[in-house]
Amino acid sequence: MSEDKIRILVAKPGLDGHDRGAKIIAKAMSDAGFEVIYTGLRQTPEQIAAAATAEDVDVVAMSILSGAHNTLFPRVVQCLREREGQDILVIGGGVIPDKDIPFLKENGIAEVFTPGTPSREAVAWVKKAVEQKRLQQ
Image (cartoon, rainbow, N blue to C red; front, side):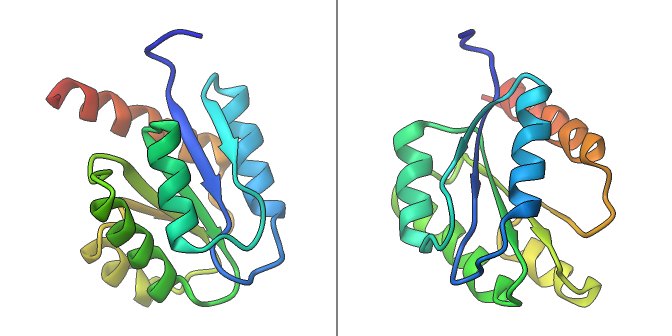
């Protein structure tokens, strides 16, 4: 494995039991050459942050359907900061109303992908964002 390979943690926060979207994005990221770690269902924000910092990932990608995104996504960002993982990009996807996206971005979510977003668009966004982050370090 190259040290330059993008490492991404795909997570399903909360009690949401639907992970088709998470698996699709994990496969797309893997096919793009990223190293993907999938946490599985029903992860707490603390578990997600612990896995992300332990795995030293570049990105945490969360998928949600339950409607708890405004609570769970910012909590993951907070938990990452508590674990000195503030340099990890956090993105989210799923059924997220447009009106909630500004709140999420104000609370540390770098990008939000809603249903219908082509997976290649999410892959391209991650590549560009990680490249920019690495140039700044």
